[in-house]
Length: 330
Image 1 (cartoon, rainbow, N blue to C red):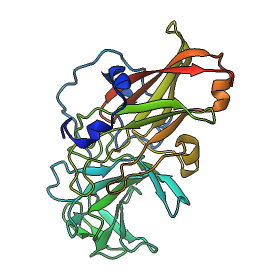
Image 2 (image 1 turned 120 degrees about the vertical axis):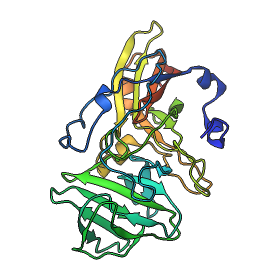
Image 3 (image 1 turned 30 degrees about the horizontal axis):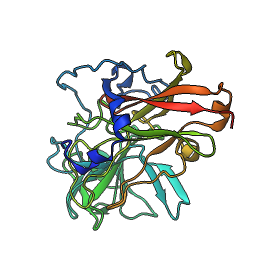
Image 4 (image 1 turned 45 degrees about the vertical axis):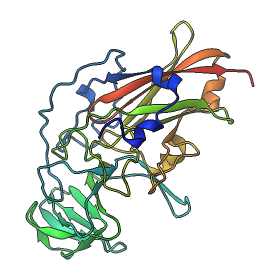
């Protein structure tokens, strides 16, 4: 994926682009593995961004499980990231994407990536779950099954079904201790690498007085048409507000951190701002986040400030943007 792709033209205005510098965030707090206890990192704050670009070493990352389509040991295009907004049924269903969408042609064989017992969802007959003896569950959506509930399957040996037309992907999710985990976190699904740079498109005051930021990332591998060139959501979005002297008025605040898990669906409207949308063919999604409410900003003295927004992915690639902001009495 290169910067000549269409999605690169969706970056913010020239002024914002000049204010954006790539940074790399310390990965120590971002690492998690399947063996980690559920919740071990859920409350963890992302580290303060460094303003100096850092050269990232070559990846020697180990992983716990491989891809559910052949070849198992090669990275496949992922067109939907963990945490992306999902809005359906005329906006009645609003939730965070609880898995990843792995692109593959319709009819592609899907393999179990976990040894255990099969469970086919009673309300979605193209949703297959494999549950291990310890309760770990991997699920595969949009897959026409060739297995039955109760059947035992073996990882990377048993074909559990084939990708259902016209979806062109398998939605893959991992659940441990009743909680969905990000398959793209370090030490989970692999091999996986990502050298793209997530960006901030804007940070503006809305008419209701809230501060809303919009961010996006590119997919590490190009996704086949018609889903080509659509954005995905960065894993972490943080912001702070500084005055004209560079003093922090609001310290670094984490708006979202999808590196390990996702918030409850009930948090959707608190985190996502009006105007948020998911990807559709030829209609790129907009990832609009409420950084600060009117009530929080109203407590700050009117004047000129700078809002700084830092975004990063699961591999620490990131950028840091500074956008002028004027707060008034109105």
